[in-house]
Length: 498
Ligand code: ADP
Ligand code: MG
Image 1 (cartoon, rainbow, N blue to C red):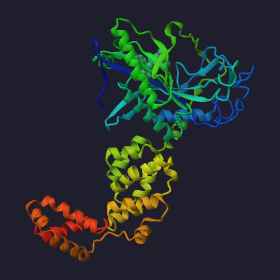
Image 2: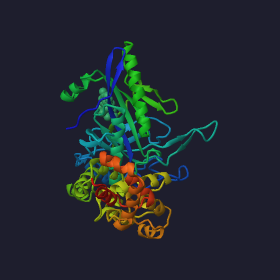
Image 3: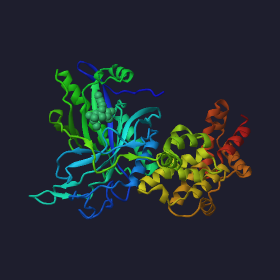
Image 4: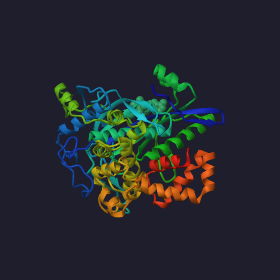
């Protein structure tokens, strides 16, 4: 079972805890919009991707995009969630200049996906579970451009009608780190599934963060009884689009609420905005002026009825997901949870690893892929699928280490040369004369000479065997790091009579 690692904030009147629930908006990976055939994609000229439906021309009717429905089902299955064979769209009515219809088509009472869960890893490797309440499909609005003209605001409807999945969690996170780790894991799952590209900079994945504070013990009462009255009033911070901002916004908001409560005030349930420049949240609208959306069933669309056979087919075609891949890498290759966890962050990284690890020392390959190669790729801003060193070349390098042809230390040098395009590992070793000296004859004469020249050190080692390291170091120096450490140790021990 997962242990909680709750962040406790010491106030003037005692300790406080935070309770966090997230509503994540994920743009569905699709070439067309949810209810029209207009194209989706960044980079188009303003209003170049707007059909008559997206512009809400009179008499236009929405037609549901089967692919977007399939993406929502896939995501639901990836979240181990209930797929509702019957669901319905509702109209959420409000006025805003970026919403030409005057309403958003969303799902209210009957979403396409019900309860599920996400297993999340904390930085220290421990895990916890976040329960998913629901996932529903809805359309995105357009965009207002305030910076094009000093006197006017422009409207770009390219995004209008784009399909979003809103994924609502239970309030199961207890620290800023847990909230960020949850979004990270959710993002990884979506990218594995291919249902959202996870690009947070473009706003294709963004979170509304709900924050409340309570006294120690209150949350446990809520978990046991499901009664929200044990919890504090929450504020919702809209559209936070980076892991760092999510954490900063929560930290600020929790402290703001604690201060109000400790001054004897009460928290107004309100919607707030996070200002990344100031690192603070500020009120956008309060519950008093909360909108009445006058939800009602969308009359232009039939309820959505899913064929169970279709759901089964989609399930059968799901890729191996991060948790399953991690477990398999651990059992198949004997990797630690940490190594497996680092490898599965990206599908391509895990694929690269498996291609390189075939028949090789799996742990050693994991080290090269997650350390040296990863560092080089990150520094160069290169995706692992474009790595200039292919998996087979890493495998060859590791084979040379395994066979004792080169030491791990020399292997670092060989790796640098491989990265610089000097050829394959074996060629570099040959050309640069980097073969490890395991030839006992050659090493023996070096050791004999060293012992003869340093009788004091030799006597010291006989007293204190750990001092043997000095001799190993000297032999390494003389051979330019190419001596096989195992062979040196063996020879030294017999020569010094240890
Ligand atoms: P609404 O329908 O008003 O949006 P929901 O019950 O759907 O309210 O909750 C929306 C989000 O707020 C969910 O992610 C939920 O986990 C979270 N949430 C609910 N209560 C709290 C609370 N006391 N503290 C923090 N988050 C909460
Ligand atoms: Mg809500």
